[in-house]
Length: 119
Image 1 (cartoon, rainbow, N blue to C red):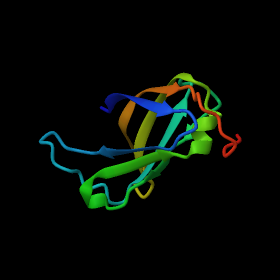
Image 2: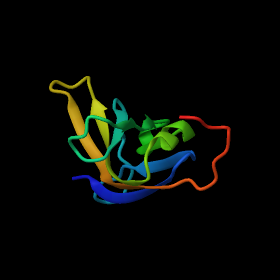
Image 3: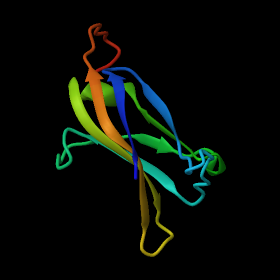
Image 4: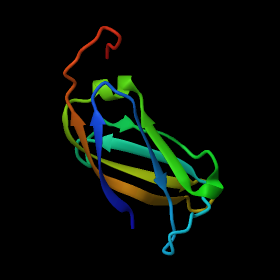
């Protein structure tokens, strides 16, 4: 079962986070062979979504890195959304999908508007 978390994103800013994948004893899980993916949606059946930039640098550490560019966060309206992050192993038959994190996203409005970003 996935861990539940609320994440906070400043509209128009870079967002980065890391997700440690641990076993019941708190030790890192080797996630070799998996890719990471994740999305943000207004609600679970929304057709519109934002993809996280997700990567695994060293699978033996069990850490997933997720992020959003300032252009991605600027395109999001302030408010509450849902998200999840999954590990996928497409070499398995059937494909193995493990949800590691899910929860709520709160996007706070941007007060200072510069000319450097345009959606």
